[in-house]
Length: 138
Ligand code: B12
Image (cartoon, rainbow, N blue to C red; front, side, top):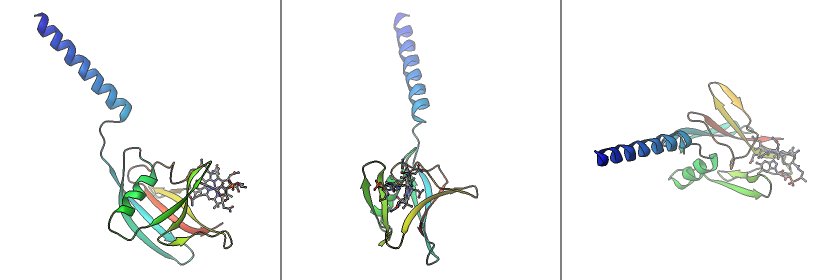
């Protein structure tokens, strides 16, 4: 009788722990697919890549995974003391202060496009969101 009660108590504790971990960590989620569009607005060219984003993962992680996969996506960043990684070049094309060009980060979902107020090292894409890296002028 006592042994049964102890086992029941232990099981209940374990279940509570699992529920608490699930609530705080959002279950044991799998990576979600996202599209990454590389858009050169000055030459009117674009390329679409598919990659995955970890649960609540940063965009930079998805970009690194894509870069490590056998496709043509390449990028470089420069570390900024205050804001983290600044996206310098994509597929060999770099922004340039003289030409006032840069890679802008955009995110599109349900037909609405936003300009995130953080860079690739901080932005957390939502599942299904389309990320646009747009070569443009400022
Ligand atoms: C000018 C400016 C830009 C210019 C910088 C180029 C230039 N030569 O002027 C351009 C247009 C390229 C730019 C781009 C972006 N910017 Co900006 N930018 C600014 C701004 C208005 C002034 C920066 C400045 O000149 N400081 C004075 C100089 C002397 O200091 P500095 O340290 O040398 O400045 C450099 C850094 O700030 C860097 N920089 C500028 N923006 C960003 C963004 C990120 C993520 C990083 C890592 C570095 C960085 O470029 C500056 C010149 O070299 C600040 C807001 C502010 N009032 O500070 C926002 C600001 C820094 N930018 C911001 C953002 C979000 C971006 C973008 C990510 C926007 C987007 N969605 O595309 C992109 C960067 C994309 C990428 N390629 O990684 C945010 C950063 C917040 C954060 N916590 O990440 C700020 C604070 C504005 C905001 N929304 O609140 N930006």
